[in-house]
Length: 144
Image 1 (tube, rainbow, N blue to C red):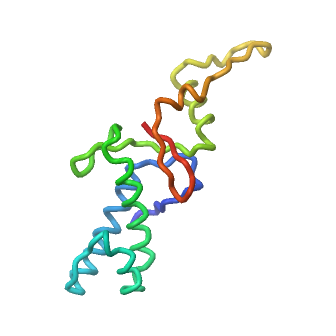
Image 2: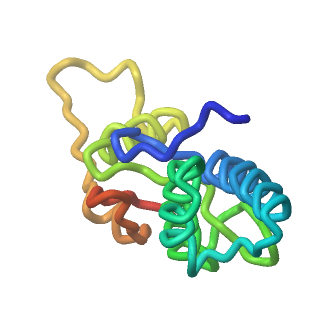
Image 3: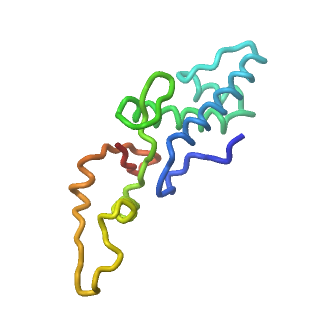
C-alpha cells in the first residue's frame, strides 16, 4: 500500500499519486465487498463507511479522492487514466509564487547572476490566468 494520503497542506500534489492511491483503495474495497457479496459504489461510500466501520477511513479517503479526480478530469494535462486526461500537478495557492519562481528559474527565464540593484518583477496574476483551480478541504490548488 502506498504511503500517499491526500493532504491539503502539501505545496504540490502529484495527481499520479492520487490515482495510484485511489486504485489501491478501490481494489481493497472491491475485495472486501466481494467477500461480503455486495457491490462497491461511490454513491454509497458514505453509507458504507457507517455500515462497514472497519473500513470507514478507506471509504472516506476513497470518496475524497474521487471528488477531486472528478473535478479535474478532462481539463487538459499530461496524464491519461480511464479514458480521460488529468493534469499532473496541483499547486497550493500559498505556494504558487514559489513554484512559479522555481519554474522560471529552471527554464532559464530568471538569471542567477543579476546585480543586487536590479530586480525582476513577475506578474503572478498573469501567470495564474493560464491555470484552473480546485478546492481540496477548503484550500485552493491550481492546475493546467
